Length: 434
Image (cartoon, rainbow, N blue to C red; front, side):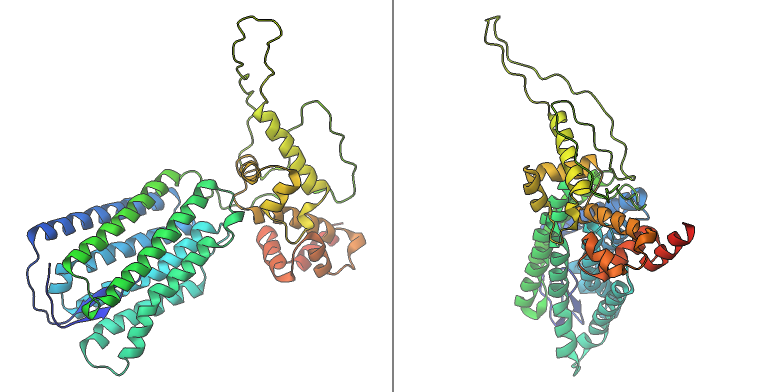
């Protein structure tokens, strides 16, 4: 345990830590010191391994870049919150590490956004938030904690609010559109990050606010790093295993739009024969490989006549039929035109469990998000209408609303992301070519 006097709080990002002035040091117990150092060493090793894996496997993807920044920020936090470091290093030298530690709350928020939104792009707002929080923490540690500043109640109050505000923003980002996420392993990771990351942030903030001078004792600091080790260990294991598969998109290239039947075409009659595999697939997804399923094994009948069992249903054929039904509902019946279409309502329409439809769209068609899948059909219809000379007088807003978009703003953004042109520019180009 450590006893220290004259300490003013400089709360960090995800957890919070003190910024020290002149200190009276009581040596820590050797066992506690060794355990604390060992835990911090393991945490640092895991963070560096995680950063190296992300930088190696997905160096250009926003979630990987945000993850690398967060892991390096956590390394600075683990070092700066070491009890002996806080006790021996002057507060002016602690200020940079405190600034990085506090701004980790912003990096956590950015990382969650990038991880769960395949269309995420870093914006100036994110950088401005990080700089503002880092500057606030550095000012509090270097100036406010060293004297009786009149700004102390305001600046320290703002700093104490940082972990809570960005924990709520991170939870909101992870929970948003949870049902539209088609990657099952990523859906489970959302729950873990929300429960542990936000709970850890708020819990440690509460502990610091309840502690004298906002500082942790030696035992509390060890418990703190042990909790961080547990979270980082699970996340590192999950992300290293998923780094090349489900967690991150395989490519940042835009997906090809599906074919859409714009004129009413009678649906093919359902027959007893096999159903052709679905041909409307994401171009970014690998082409499906038709592997004949192994024949289902039937239990032995011991040669007794009349006891031959019924053949078990072929799961591959069931998926083919579901794929054909999905294609008919989307391309022929234009279910995508419904503004409130969801994975649940579409599954109910097809009379299948939600998990089966989610698995089919993700694993067979290669889509990671239900909204992106639906918007592909909407954009395909809008592009065909904009290129139609007979509809040159039809307003762009009418075309967007007919295709299923709720307003012109999301339509313009999705259209520009898919084509690189605005709808008006696209229409002029296509009509000039015709």
